[in-house]
Every structure is written in C-alpha cells, then in structure tokens.
Amino acid sequence: MIAFCCYRVLEFNLTAFCLYLLVFLIFCRLLGFYSAMAMDSVLISHFLTMGNMDVHSVLNEAGLFLIGTLMGIAVNLTLRKDSKKTEELMQKTDEKIRHILLRASERIMDADLKDYDGTCLVELDDLLDKSYKQALTDYKNDLIDPVDIDLKYIGMRRKQGEILSEIYRNVSEIKTTPDTAATISAFLRKISEQYGRENDVTGLLDETYKMILRFKELPLPETREEFEDRARLFVLMRSIADFLKIKKEMFNNPV
Image 1 (cartoon, rainbow, N blue to C red):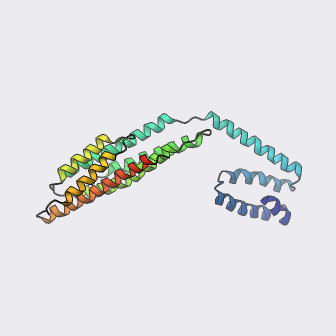
Image 2: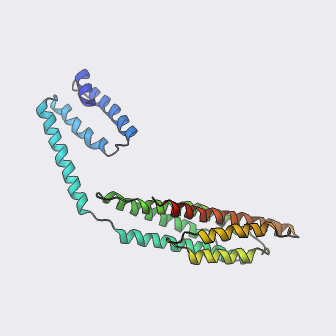
C-alpha cells in the first residue's frame, strides 16, 4: 500500500522509490519488522523496473514472496540447535567464574599472590560473548519452539561478571589481613565450590546477610591500614550479596 501510494503520486521513478523506502523503513523499525526491510524493498524495486503495478505484476511479486518464504522455512527446518556446544560454552563460563572466586579467596589472604592481574576477567568476557552468540544462533534456528532461557542465563552471568570486576578491584587493593579476612576468604571458597546452574543460592545469600550483620558489631581496627582494608572487605561482602541476588532473581523468574 505504501509503494502503491508513492508510485501513484510520484509515478515510477527513483524519487517515489526513495520516499517508499523512507516511510517503509520507519514503519518497520517502529513495529520491529527488521527482517522484512530488505526482502520487501527488493520486491518493490521490481515495480520500479517494470514501470507499472497492475494486478498481474502484484500477483507475480506475491508469488516470488511466497516461494522465498517457503524456501526459507524449508532451510530453517534443516538447521538444528547445537545444544551441546552451547552447554559446553556455558560450563566453561561457570568454571571460569569459579576460578575467579577462588583466586579472590586466595588473594584476600595473600597480598603477594602471583598473576592476580585481572586476566581472568578478560577471559570471562570472551567466554560470555561466545556463549551469547552461540545461544542466539540456537534460538534463531529453532523455528518451531524457540526458548530464550539460555540467553537469559548468559545475561545473568554477564551481570555477575560486572560484580566480579568490582570484587577484583576491591580485593586487589587489600594490603593487610584484617580479622574478617579469613572468614570472607573461606566464604568465597565455599561459593566457588557450590557455584552451579541448579543452585538457587538461598542458603548462601542468607549466610551473606548474617556475616554482614556480625561484621558490623566487631570493634574498630587499631590502625588506619586495617581500618581501610576492613572497609574494603565490608564493601566486598555487599558485592557478594549483589552477586548472589542476581542469581536468585534469575532462579525465581526463569521465563
């Protein structure tokens, strides 16, 4: 209808086609019909070449559209989700996060820990990108019953990755070993060991809040360095709570 009006008013010339493109692309973007932009525009350009838009021409283009659509469906039906690859990438991502938590646990107790330089966070970002691309490909290739749970899961892990970056920055600045360090180090190790897709982290989250309350009741440190490092560890506990809450929300709202 848009093309018919443009060609009717301005006749079959480049100006009319450009006007059609402008209106049609705006319409598609507003309604989210992104995949229709190129295909429909190519068909409409045929009318410009023929110089008419009679019933026979419209039926001919409709036939081309139908053939193209059926071929696309046929090709899509031959494609299969590579669930094994997606699952493998997500397992590698979870393993990397376990490793990051474990290294943070070690760094809290050892200010001279070797190779604690944030490289693992870069590797995590790379794994998250690969996992998302593979999960998105699987989602698009599933014509009959597409499910986006893997995409949401990876999105959740990406948010947790941002929290892990905050944890890394805090931990890397610790210079002493405050009285709360051993407890927090052991707790990070515990999270690393229990970290998994099926864990709803309810117990870990409850334990986090209890630890935060206990730490608030401790007497103040005697030195400035200890005070600053304990403050960093307190902020770290808040980050751990945020890290776990992201997983809890995902578990409570999987769809």
